[in-house]
Image 1 (cartoon, one colour):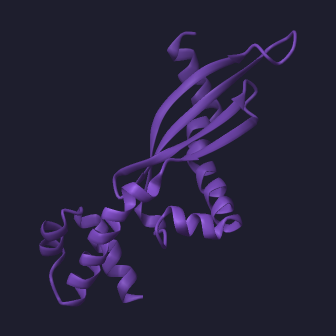
Image 2 (cartoon, rainbow, N blue to C red):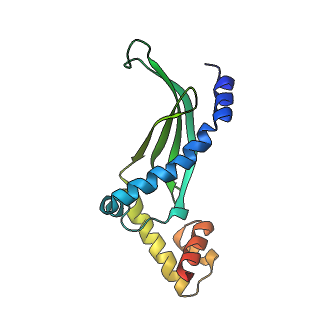
Image 3 (cartoon, rainbow, N blue to C red):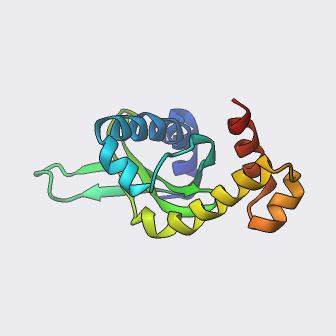
Length: 157
């Protein structure tokens, strides 16, 4: 398939945009239904402001196992990052008419990635409480200043 046709299809159906939005509904539904699993997987509380999605791929997939007619779907795939660490993927499949066919949330073994990160976040929170500046805390923890600011705002509330 010509990539320009695929990208035009994406623009017409806002598929990647809908995928990015769809993540939050799926993630929040999973988190609410599986509170214990979520808490265990993320080694505590999840701060939504630390989650970022990156577009990964858009591609046409043809399924041979759906009977005589087969079935074609367009897949929009994203990477899920937590404080810039890859923790999984989220994919949404669309029928060619633009209707959502299915979606898939795949969180890797997040705990091993997040435990060292949670330590840095705790240090950042404590350093801010001691009066250190955002830049000082960023240098100390090697966390981006944008995340330090999120911690600062959440600590004030």
